[in-house]
Each structure stands twice: as C-alpha cells, then as structure tokens.
Image (cartoon, rainbow, N blue to C red; front, side):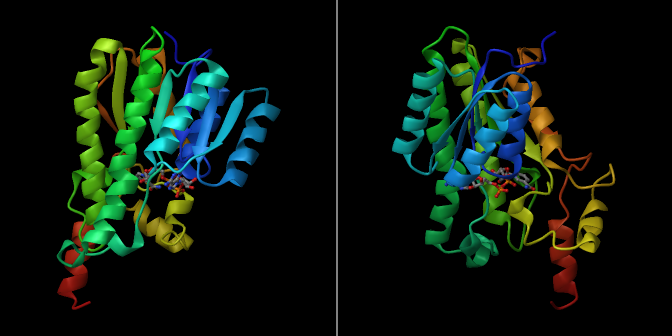
Length: 270
Ligand SMILES: NC(=O)c1ccc[n+]([C@@H]2O[C@H](COP(=O)([O-])OP(=O)(O)OC[C@H]3O[C@@H](n4cnc5c(N)ncnc54)[C@H](O)[C@@H]3O)[C@@H](O)[C@H]2O)c1
C-alpha cells in the first residue's frame, strides 16, 4: 500500500502560510513536486527554497485565487513546468472582516467578498484542476479545505464563513460524482481550530489556547501538521477508493463551541 507521493505533481493554494505551507512541505517530503500558489511572493520564494534545499522540487506562482484567469494560469504553469497535475489542494481561504458578524447584520458587499474568497475561488480551482488532470490518464486527487464550522451554527461572527465552508463541502461531494468517471477523486478536510496565522488575532495567549483546547476531546487544539497528514493520505494511492468524503481533523470534536459561547454571552447581557 502506497502512502507516499513519489512522482506526483501537486498544486497547493494558500501555500505561503499556515495549513498550505505545512501541506506543501509534507507533500515535498513524501516525494511530490509541488506548485506553490499564494498572494505573497516572498513567502512562496522562501518556501520553495526550503523545499529545494532539502532536495525536492518546487515552483512558486504568485496567484490570487479569486481571479479565474490567475487560477487558469496557475494550472498552465504547473503543466508547462512539470507536465501534469495529480493533486490539487483548494486551500486558500479565510475570514473577511466585514462579514464576521451576525447574519442579521451582514451586508451584501461583505457577503460577496466572503463568497468570492471561500466559494467561487474553489470552483475556479476545481475547474482548472479537472482540466489539468484530464490531460493525463491517471486521474487525480482534488482536496477542498472545509472546516468544522461547516457543520455547526456559528453565530456572532463565523456564520457567513461556516455557510461558505458548507457550500464548498457540498460542491466537493457533487464533483466527486461528476469527475469520478475521469478517475478524479474529490474530498474535503474539515479541521477544527488549528494554530495558524489566520487565528493570530484569536489565539493571543496560552490561557486562551488552553481554554479553546477544553472543547477538543484530545485535549489540545490542532497544529498545521495534523492537517497535513490528512492531506497526504487523501492525495496518496492509499486513498484510491476514497471520494466524496469529508475527513474531520478536529481532535475528536464534532461540534464547535460558538453557539454555547454566544448564548451564554447574551444571557449575561454582553
Ligand atoms: N486555521 C484554522 O483553524 C482553520 C480551520 C478550519 C479551516 N481552515 C481553512 O484552512 C485554509 C487555510 O487556513 P490557514 O489557517 O492556513 O490560513 P492562513 O491565513 O494562516 O494562511 C492562508 C494563506 O492563504 C493565502 N491567501 C489568502 N487569500 C488568498 C487569495 N485570494 N489568493 C491566494 N492566496 C490567498 C494567504 O496569503 C496565506 O498564505 C482556509 O481555507 C481556512 O478557511 C483553517
């Protein structure tokens, strides 16, 4: 059984930081050639150097995933440089400050931005990935970065984000059906809280991290490598019959704590 990625070509979006960076390093460690896509060229260049210094192969392509043209150009760059695409991780995403509010208050412009970054960009990525993977005969593995927030009410800030993550989880399941005949597998990963730059503004002290950890049965919040391991598995031939799945990577948590915190804060008059 093959859990390695030797000889495979992987595209990872949002590779500059956080989960995308950890996934890219893990893919390279497992023998994949990695196409690193993100907005920050400096982050990408230093990651590409880290991979090549360790004997791997990497290509850095500055990409804004909200641009369809840029995502198509990313797929073209991968094909031109490495000749094929076996793995594509739709990972870039995150919060839009103006949309981090109750549903009762969110405005259309903020909602559009949330959708553009977290839903539309994933469709662009899936379309570009499918086109690139269909140029070969070996199918491929397409991975969507969802969230535990997709499966819960997330009042008071992450509601729009959770809705976007549920939308892409559903899109991934549908794509698994549509692309199965081309040998392309489509799966989602749904992490709980993971310590990345995305949450720098939340995880500001050891006390706060310990408080969040109470909601995780394994007794800690996630680290980027926890998610990278799941991404390696789904990309590998060991997962060759896994498609349409959503893999929770959440330390045993099956719900988030937001509804309880929200209700208790309001009960206390906050
Ligand atoms: N950290 C968590 O707790 C957590 C939990 C569940 C899901 N997620 C999801 O995992 C993914 C990665 O999150 P993270 O925590 O690593 O975030 P992060 O903010 O630490 O890193 C995100 C990376 O994506 C890049 N990026 C952002 N917008 C982009 C754009 N328009 N085009 C190209 N690149 C862009 C950033 O430059 C950065 O390199 C996101 O989709 C996020 O929603 C994160």
